[in-house]
Length: 519
Image: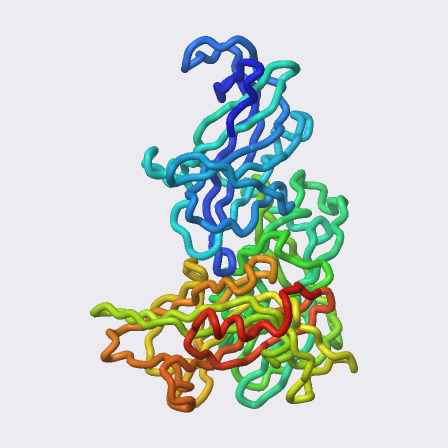
């Protein structure tokens, strides 16, 4: 962003107390989060003026706004500053980049040299590089940045490129009371072949008391990177699922009778948790398991009790709050609303393209008006109230595909997303397109976005994607489910339908009345 023109602007970073450093990237859900930190340091008054003499200093400057130069083809999902979701503005920079500009309005006293402030830019999909500076500086750590502010009457616009931040402090904050998360046991389903335990992660208000008196860091807005649960040595874990998404896991020895179950790949930021809606996850054990955790015996509790540790970070510090699960309320799944007509999304089939090795099936998802009021199957009711999914979000998408296909990649709106496959029928699988995470405001009515599925083999080997093509006599037919949540009631929505060939006229036929957003 250009500096003000009424006064000379000091742009030497050496005359400013602020630096931005690169921490690293994280695979968060289906997206990529690039982690930076804003630091303050003393200004070296004897540092040379590299671009020629500039009158004035910015040693006590404030920050009006901050800009990062990123590739302009990327889709920014959110920007966090000190754990808070920030409004940002895209400003043109070069032919292949934009400035992501944040209005901060911070003074120097708002920063502590001991606590760098986290700055996170999350873009949709799996992305290798965020900033063009990685190319011309030949460094993964490089991202061009600029700060705008004033030191008295002096205009300041220090401008530089990020460098790599050092390793975090190995001293780990383990006081559970100083962190915002608690793990609870909810329920378990005993079966002879396998037993599934349901837990959740609930948000709470942290307190500042440091009970062991040895930690100066704060973890009140910590990330959750992975979790550990202490279980008996003899148990065999078959799968771990975080809100339906299978997560990688492993076990490591702990005592002569127990081991740690390490639930990896959570990688969620404080902002992504909802204080009104705990996040559920399940652990599936092989066999009939009545008591998975030694803590229940050690503390002589009648209810299931497990020792756990959450691992994350905040600022330059690591966090490892450690505690025991409590018992949380459990309600049976009331199902979800599956009537497509009362939900605002429709899927259609567009085209098939093939190379020698890969066939790409292209579908699309469109936002339309949810205009009909009939509940055709008459069962989508929760708590005696009909579920309203007219303004639902899109969390995941499922496609019923032939189980002989080897899926190699999926994309939503040109962003490469995670996916998983689960059995459906003897000849088909559900292909889950994970982490779509679009709200109704992220889409433009009647302007479809693409959903692409790449499978191994050319079009001769992979003629049709979905079994519905045989049922409905059209290669354009594919059974789909769009899953999401309707706020503020947190009702589950799962409209189910079958695709047809896309045409603008067919899409407009879904409109029963002029477009009015519901909810």
